[in-house]
Length: 186
Image (cartoon, rainbow, N blue to C red; front, side, top):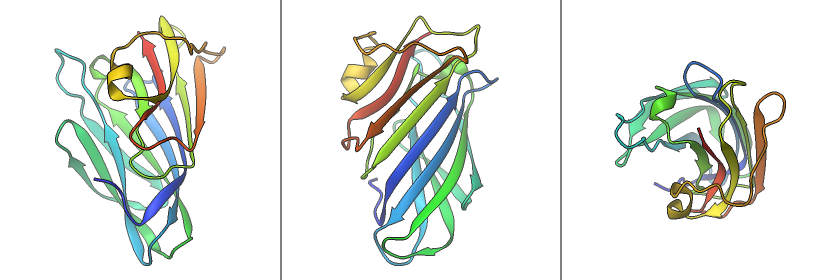
């Protein structure tokens, strides 16, 4: 379901892999493109690891709105419908925060990939690994098809975690329906 009535000016994510369960701290700045915009959708696909039960996902709006509902989509995706504090008019900007928690590391595919389904001007991703849980390799995924990043090969664009166990990648104007983000081998 392609979002209508708004686009993402900025989508910033900090994925915490150093916590008891993976946590995604997300900050979205949207721009309204239609009058009276009063709710938006945040979507998340959570592909499971073969042989494991599908991960469950909990979401919480931390500021800038209220979570109306969480909807499970066919194929394992989730949509979070967020009620805005006041209706927006075309050109109005609004920011909200969302924390998403997965049910466990062992059930999560080892990547954080954003596949835009609407215009996005900036996608900024930071992944933080525990110091005793650094992956064998980490790579940047830029404008790849699902088939390519699901192959799970290290490729050429390798990233090295800093002293805090973090890697960072930013993508300006990612193309719709292609994958952008970070992939790793545990």
